[in-house]
Amino acid sequence: MPASDPPAVSPDGTGPTEAGVTELAALVEAPEPGEQPSRRLIRRGPLRGLPVEVAVLSAVAFFVAAGFGIVAPAIPVFARSFGVSYSAAGAVISAFALMRLISALGCGRLVNHFGERLILGAGITIVAVSSALAGLSANYGQLLTLRGVGGIGSAMFSVSASSLLLSVTSSGQRGRAMGAFTGGFLLGGIAGPGLGGVVTGWSLRAPFFLYAGTLAAAGGVGLLLLPRRLNKHGQPATRSELPLLTVREAFRLPAFRAAAGVNLAENWAAIGVRAALVPLLVVEVLHRSPVWTGIGLTVFTAANILTLTLGSRLADRRGRRPLMLSGCLVSATGTFLLVLPHTLPLFLVAMAVFGLGSGLLSVAPGAMLGDVAGGRGGTAVAAYQMAGDLGSLTGPVLAGALADSAGFSTAFALSTAVLLAAAMIAFRAPETLRRT
Image 1 (cartoon, rainbow, N blue to C red):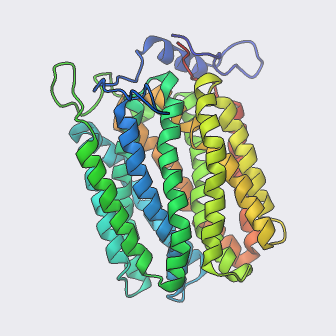
Image 2 (image 1 turned 120 degrees about the vertical axis):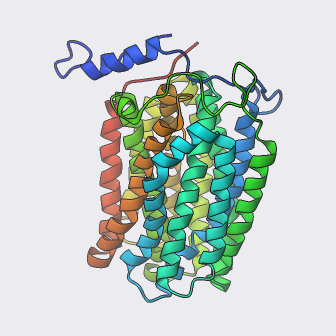
């Protein structure tokens, strides 16, 4: 089936680029990546017609996000309690992302060999244990180390979950599937931050223990309810029977590069800078209680939901590229509002706008990834995740350093520039949706 739009054209507009031809050939000649190995579909409700794995993974995502929402307000503030700088506090978040980045490709190979279900359960267990121990940290070094260990487990979970989600869905389903999966995270995000702000105001250590508990619940749901995947011979399958897509081959595809670039910018802003600087902005610039951090993050998450459902359906009907472009532009508007003089009402408005844009970016890049890599092994999915982790890694450190030296407005201005650069990449991306 041909791609819905032609590939990128040459600078003079006379024809497709060599890379565009390569990608179009890959899309036309390769079979549909989604394989739905279990053939078990949801029969009722808003997820009707999607594989049952989508519902289970969405439930797992809820518990993971609820726990992270509880602990997120505490991480930088807990780090600062050891008397470190803003950039050092941001490094605690970066350590988590660094270990995800380093271990991602290895996790992709584990997924190829052992299967998604086992690696998912093992990864969540590692994050849960390391989080509980982080709550017992006696100094900054212990906290930094334990968050890094948690990053390895997080890589195992996210690579295995994303690989499974993209491999069991077809191109026309991936927008809805990514929307459901992200929706699980968002609902958990609503449940977590408000409680996290309250708990952080009571104790900086308690959120880490609550986080471990929600992760234990997530691991139990995954191990008990995820069906075992079978190949065409009825034997347990560890990956699709389609040829593996190597990392080098993936980066030759313009669509993969665009999805990875937008994912980097989204993680830089929405995960890295937001998680690292927003709690400090509330406490040390707005001079408000950590409760307002939870409120701001809840506003962000609620705005995500307003665009997530619409965006997931548009991604399957109109394509991935328009949503990537508009999501980057709206998110950049939200971060720009944080550049302006800091007041509590403007902070809440900025978080709402930022959340609207982030909701669009929660669907489209992942769906584009699935169009070119779904069902073809965990390493290409791991490479995509590495791009996002690179944003999560560099965002907190560079933005924290700018906050130390030039103020919070300059730090948020840099995030705006990163999102605008991603918008340019999205504008030049080919469309990958295959309409049946």
